[in-house]
Length: 339
Image 1 (cartoon, rainbow, N blue to C red):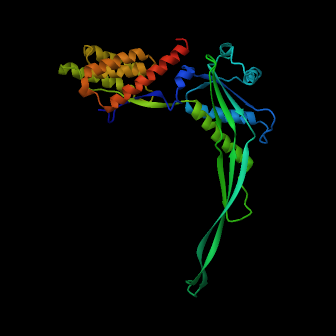
Image 2 (image 1 turned 30 degrees about the vertical axis):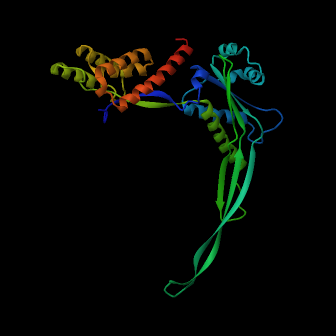
Image 3 (image 1 turned 60 degrees about the vertical axis):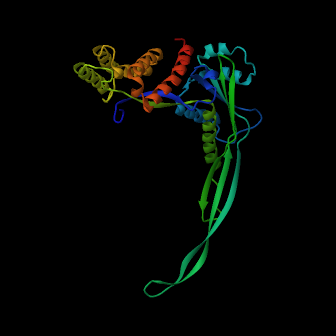
């Protein structure tokens, strides 16, 4: 059972936009270029491009999927590509810039902002007369007003992700505003500032664009096994279990060492005459975490075959189905990286 077992954390992909792998074909290296449509000025901090770039970069890095290549020295070239409608010759650009794709962020129109005022009233019971002991002897109703100033601020930005290998592009335009409020007892209170509005709305736009164009990576905890399933002889079983436990211990230290654990698991497999289900399972996990998905699949298949239907449970099924989904992704990425 897995209740308190040692685990290995493996990065896996979640929340991929529909058809994402077919679109990017495993390419993970991208550059970012920010620009705006001609014909209007952004009345915000002079260095708005750096601000927008930083917000998008931060949002993409949080997702953990794309590797961002710094192309700041290639600004002129990127500007040319961004403004040209020509899709041909993209492969050359991919080679020239050493990226699989480019993410263009275009501010499509000036941000909009609106300040709304709303007042709410409530009746409070307040004391109007006290006796000599300081006890209240009569009350009156008093109307208390609260003024709410709400700023609705929208950054209109379009994200266009281009796969330079195929010339295909996906885009998403943000129109979702940020809503910020100030509450006060004074009718003269003011709305949140334009700069606060811009910063928050930029955050919203970055997150919305990233959500539509990038998957997310997270750590999937895969449990290791240390029981003697598959081994009949009781003396051999006890040495096999010792070897499995010895291997798993390498992952419970402050500096986990998967390669030293693997040596122990391979020893357990040899001792068991290739019959230890736990050793096959653990070695499957080792190879998965190293990206050797064909070898991992072989070990997992051996474990399933030798373990039989009673050994398989819902947690192991979950691990196997996650592995199968990841196997295709990892193979695509390796092909893309030219392995």
